[in-house]
Amino acid sequence: MRITVCPGATAASAHVVRRIAAALRRDPSLVLSLPTGRTPIEVYDGLARLVARGRLDFSRAVTFNLDEFVGLALDDPRSYRAFMGRHLFDRVGLPPRRAHVLDGAARDLAGECARFERAIEAAGGIGLSLVGIGLNGHVGFNEPGPGLVAATHRVKLTSLTRRANAKPFGGDPRRVPHEALTMGIGTILGARRIVLLATGRSKARVVPRAIAGPVTTWLPASFLQLHADVEFVLDRDAASRLG
Ligand code: GLP
Image (cartoon, helix red, strand yellow):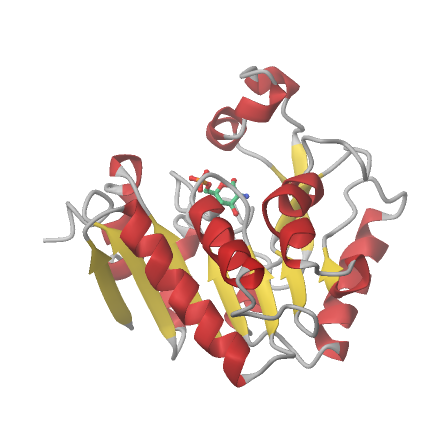
């Protein structure tokens, strides 16, 4: 496990941009898995800037998003699909057939999860997975509980997660979907390399538990400790309780 502490969120994001850019230059058909949320926005901005300057090429890359809300239409601006379009896909010219996002509006949600797993396998597996961490230690939408599911599946979101995701829903957690689809913890750990980015004081309590606490289903990010090639990229605020 590698831990990189950067002076601020901008420096931490720039570090992750360098990691992704180097991996993509080495392997132009890299398979990435990507998160949503506040944290990766600066990373996506940095990648888009490199593409705009002709210093990075996404035309052969393949991406799989970690998760999506259940019940939002494909073109709903509050969906993670729309978020990814705005922040990354449209800016780096990633064609929709190479940018895989779970369809939370699919009629057969179990079938959609199985299709997603098959698509990851057909792409040759995930080369680099960028993940964030929820306030309760979730990765993707794998919420804490008595057990975890290995493969992509449907989940019920906790009220804390719905509160944390309320912004695009007018700040009202009651309007946040109650369910989501998420890559399972096994799918995430199946990536050849994982980079977790956490920034800001709000993550200071959960980060040490993920890095050095017991591996427990009550803190899904702790399972990343089991991976052979994982890097935790933190800013000083997120690392402030690491000791
Ligand atoms: C959401 C996403 C996660 C993300 C987490 C942290 O619930 N499903 O994939 O890592 O929240 O988000 P933020 O970066 O906004 O703190």
